[in-house]
Amino acid sequence: MPPKDESKPQKSLVEHARSIAALPGEKLDELKAFGAEKLDQTMAAFLNALPALRQAGYALREFEIELGLTPKIIAHFMPVAASDDDIAAAREALKSNKIGASMLSVLRRAGDVHRQVKVPGFECAHMEIDVGVIPAVRLRYRSADAP
Image (cartoon, rainbow, N blue to C red; front, side):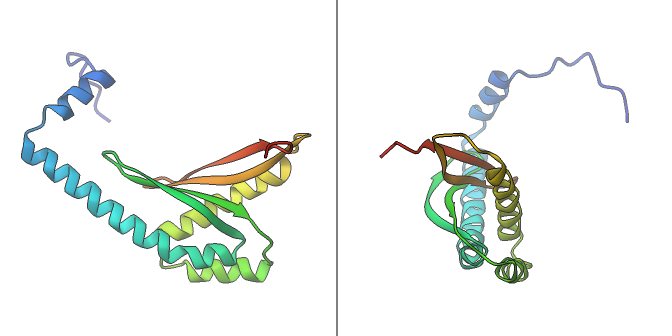
């Protein structure tokens, strides 16, 4: 690996954002088109994965779409009962859907954590997953007394 060129200072996040904002109109349009295409691809994979995810024990409650340079879908799932056979069948159904398979993997790991976290007076409200290039999941807990 070649040594870093210390003569060029690193851009700060603000400087990087300004350079993106200063892109010529056609480059910005190109980025927007790329983002729209990625969102379409991600949405198609997401929708195709839903039946298998439901079979594996994850019922979709709602979803959001976050628009930005890298758009993403934020899905909210509730865990429901599923057998080992159902989970195996869901894995098989998602073999050709990379996004769906990643979602199932992340949701399964979050489910393992969900079963370990016990906070008196709180219950898991839902599992929230960012469906994008790298899926991320959050467990949201709500007071058992909350309406």
